[in-house]
Length: 247
Image (cartoon, rainbow, N blue to C red; front, side, top):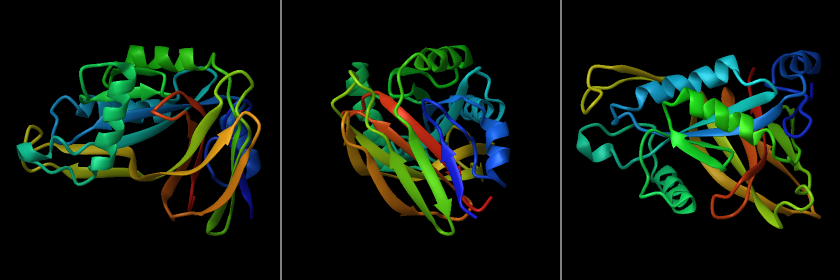
């Protein structure tokens, strides 16, 4: 059976679950908002931010918003006693690009970035929800993920008029969740839990205000498939969608 998910200006889904009817009831007409958390198991300040990201995902506390979360584990904490098994230099690089974009002194953890528009302390729930509400006021492009078997068709509409001239289409595969017993470092002796742990993040295309984008990508069983549209140089995110394979 083909399953379809659209999350953008007019959304009709939340997760690729049992049927299109279920998706409609779960998602309503909410707009997608992408929330990225830059975190590390080597950072003692990060567990509260990890918990906040999970709460945003599970409770969806902002009316009108479908919050899509990404947990991106940086590697620059790995030298102080605990090598985060989920970490990647690619996420450190992505965060450094955000630091330049927001003109802050440098990357830090925990940090949340909402729709590429706002950065904030990753454990600040009030600021995170406020940033999500603010992002809802922005125009959107529609992102669709139609899944059939082991493949998904990704379709992205042109950018909204009078917004950006060009943007990149990104694909992320993320593990649904993970739990780790930390043996060394600042979190020694703690059992840490994470959601939507990014395993791979890559650009798969481009769009502008006149041309759309369409491609097919493989699904990975039990992994979240997230597609989002972002201006170059870590600019604003104009649309996003989430699909859960194997559910």
